[in-house]
Image (cartoon, rainbow, N blue to C red):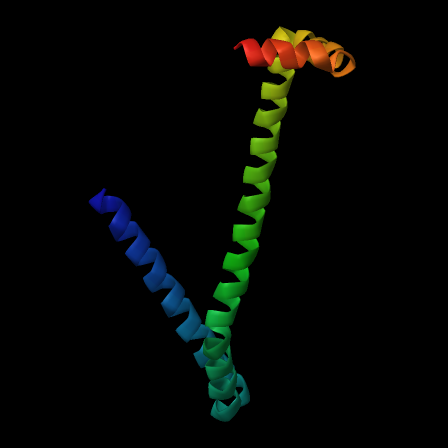
Length: 110
């Protein structure tokens, strides 16, 4: 477990080092620190917005996936219901609709 944390820290450090090297190369080529810092601060300023957008998109994707799973389970439940007792229940209800007087008598007795 500790070994994994060390690898993660080393990986982040190497990304930071690579970023610094790229900025240094950019400065050596163009000698324009104004634009480097301008774009650097612009990129840093938009990080919260990017995080918000990405998290909203991922949240929506997970929500759609969860809803699809729930609907699939509900569909299985409805299928089991109709295969076990649903047809008989529907025919009983249908007969009850045409014979409402008898249904009310049965309900009143209970």
